[in-house]
Image (tube, rainbow, N blue to C red; front, top):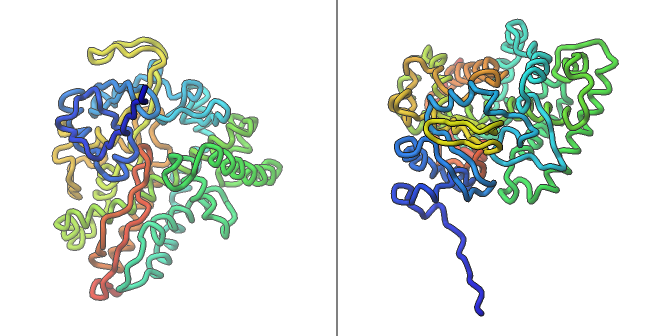
Length: 424
């Protein structure tokens, strides 16, 4: 008998408006890499805001796509858990033989205690000190940019600034700071997407990360407490006795949280202003709009597309029976475009009323620890950009990350025309 050959689905060739809803798998990385997912979420918000996918690449899951429903799931952490023992916070389960506990993937009370251990890094006093440092570094990075030449904004500005910031937060060896960028990318990469080939490579590189940071831990655990994140963990009762994999998990949480979100919002903001040139004109005419623009950029970009929870028991939600153990995916990238809450959500509007009404930092007890730091970095970058340059031109469509978790950019090729350089 001839063997039947099943052709692989070409998700990019499908029409999301005519495709049967039961065939929707919005978590396909290729949809995000090609910025092709928007109509899928628009249709889900209209027709199936609580949607079951039984044939996903990473297994079955519920998609929650409306703002109000995401808030309800976030607020009910007893039923919808982020604990690593259920699989963690991303649609892709952590590997059973390589489980990395981290406080974002824990429930109270342990979550609260471990989060409190590193909370001082974003105290008002710490942020005031960091602001001076961030501004000096932003000035140096921007002053070093080529004029009249095309270059990759992602590498020269977004990655460099955020990696410098991470190196400071960890008091990490300065000359090796790009290791932090690499480990962040490896931690979130989809195998075969260009960063890692398979899970064995991910494990090997993350073990190198653990070994490197273990040396730093051993230096600081017996030293006088300092103001960096490693020292904070080494000297807190909540974290000083964590095992190696838990230490690695918390490190990666802080690395990814401090890297991907800010990095991709810095790139996404420039891309968005080029996409909506009238808004760019408003900004150039009134630099005082920066403070309002920053949270609008973070909403429009939504640097992490989703967070996942797992049902701890059977639960009725919006007329659907969610069963114990089922994955529930909150699509921030969809909730941030929900017209019921955010009018003209597809547009960047730098004068938007209530711009902080977005889901990019999450909600409730898992709300992003570093949101004030991220806001501050973006504000400073744009204040310094506007002192130096007029319109920075995006030369071509960006190359996007192959991931349905990190919504970001690998390249954004730009040019600063000579007539757009300002004296400062």
